[in-house]
Image 1 (tube, rainbow, N blue to C red):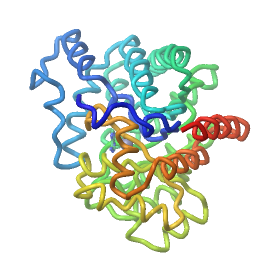
Image 2: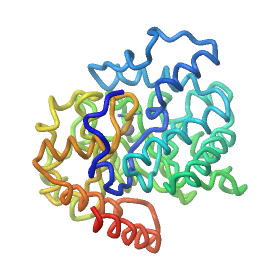
Image 3: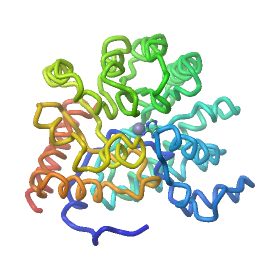
Image 4: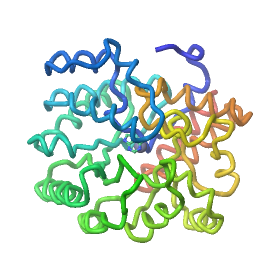
Length: 344
Ligand code: ADE
Ligand code: ZN
């Protein structure tokens, strides 16, 4: 991978990241090694050559290929560890990270083992880098609402037996076009009953408007919206999300190169959304699959909107409000960020 520039102040800004899929962070070398280990032949020699998309659904076909390589507890541990170590270099301090285990569970992998593997990798990375990370279990909408409910039920059972404590919430991701989000109401209802936080990818794919955002909030009780860029088509919804402080975890580069919803960052509505009073965070979504890291994303956003390091530092600090940390952890993280930012 090429770097835009050497590590600079944009890498040093302390950051939270609330929208990142661990499977989308796997290093190319690790992809190649996992493929070799599992006897799978990738359609190209260099995994980076896979990463060309013209829509969200064409991206997902490649994302699923990477997911299929994750076969053992050690694989999950390795990718979680590497993901956090890599992101720490670009200013990550706290992440709430998706993992989406539908195809693995359908294939007989045990959810408890997957979570234990991820947790092991996270604990090692935390000890080495000081980054902290919690998990969000993603409901894969390509597997339908019953599989979603099954995932939540399994997770709730693990929690009751004192396991999977790293998993603090559920989300819904994967394909959006042609999906009736209302069908996920039972899964989200069970998640709420089990004390899990709730977020939902909505208003991302080309062809999906603000309706899905409204359904996610009203029918599913989503407390956060992932992407949510379609909100700009509905001024009333913009005002409502701003008033109710419902965060949107925005992934500018992803919206350009994965969903192909905007032609460039300059045309992306992030700055407009922020000016409209929406609570937005900047995230990488699937950095290894989009030639991206957090520092590069912040740098690109700055260039697109003529923002400077101070502007981005403020945005990073504001992002703490969108986390699912409790009040005292938020206050501690705020003090930490303010200290680092003062020295930049
Ligand atoms: N899974 C990984 N990345 C995703 C995205 N951008 N949208 C939906 N599902 C995803
Ligand atoms: Zn995503």
